[in-house]
Length: 193
Image 1 (cartoon, helix red, strand yellow):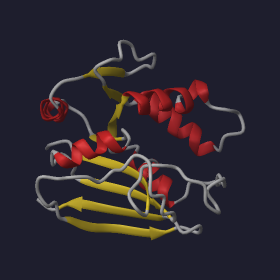
Image 2 (tube, helix red, strand yellow):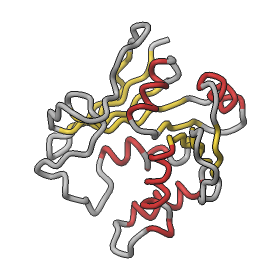
Image 3 (cartoon, one colour):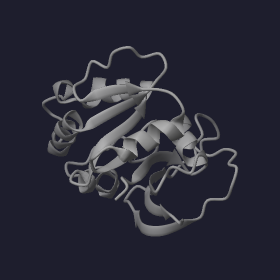
Image 4 (cartoon, helix red, strand yellow):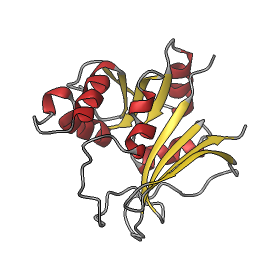
């Protein structure tokens, strides 16, 4: 069975991959919300590889590794850090030389070939957690099987955009949708093949 690839998207209503301020955005829940569960904690047993670009990788390493955790962080963030330390992390970069984080490796080259190699390796499913440019490259190449989107109740009009020119239409099937208390949406789609 082929390993499925999920793209995690964090975006404004107009498709920008930013984390804007809005009423409720500064609230860190004591328990994981539906967004967190849909992106991460509900997936710990089915995913063992996370693909990131260099900047996303460095940010995750510096903020979300277990050694970077602060004592007052919610318990589920510690679970996330332990899971993230344990899984395989793939950095797609032409410039990075060393990762500085266990279970990490650097890959570069043709995206389709890199992904074919990863899919052929034994393992569980894969999450692309790489920022708008990297996620767009995966979408444009038709490599995404599963989309998990957090949509913020903001129209931003600037920043890094997930959507852009595609060579062909891609049709998606809605699997799940949840509205959160501060107007955020969690949307889960699967690619129709």
